[in-house]
Image (tube, rainbow, N blue to C red):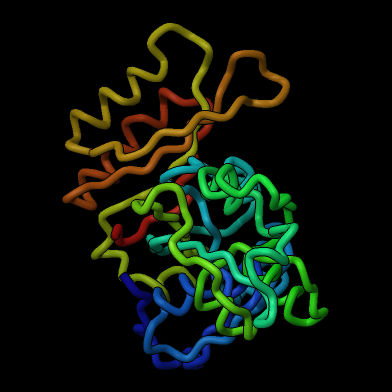
Length: 288
């Protein structure tokens, strides 16, 4: 799945804000999604900075991870999306493959520490358990760990990252494919200023939507919403709950829906709004 460029009045260069460094999984995902297009990446240390770039410059597009098949949902990123004014215009699923790499003149016997993002470390638990002599150290980014080792010539230190990042920073791959599960995928969302959404996806072709809604803490309140969605032929592909701060036992429900008819989907939204305390459409896009 890749992005769309329907309006020639826009500049051909797209500016994409991502969390991470050059060679990171966000970097790889952005190049795959916008394959064949001219893009300029804005590298951010945090996901907050991604949304801040969109807020400051409405032409900036963001790309953020939202869930992983092993680590699960990135709950903080759901909250950042909800709190922002951004809208989802696309998604991309990336196969996550990890390697362990180090300086070219180091070897297994030299390595005492391995640095990487905590999610990447968690995805390589079995590998790390088989190498108890290597201390796992959490860092901001996978590719950023590789860049740091290369830049500061950190002997005895390794990074867990994608093999392409290791090559980018001139590091030696000690072992590739070290992730615990070979069916390891991360789903990314493409987000932008709502006023730019129609430039990035053809609305009439959308078949997926992301919503967040709040229902009362009453018997059957959620099931009523789900029943109506089912009546309209809407397929619920994901549901994620997060507590409403300050309201005991009340929850926000983040859901992903797929549909065959945009009209039926719109009718279903109109039907469930009276059953919710609040509802926001986070985005409508073409599902992958």
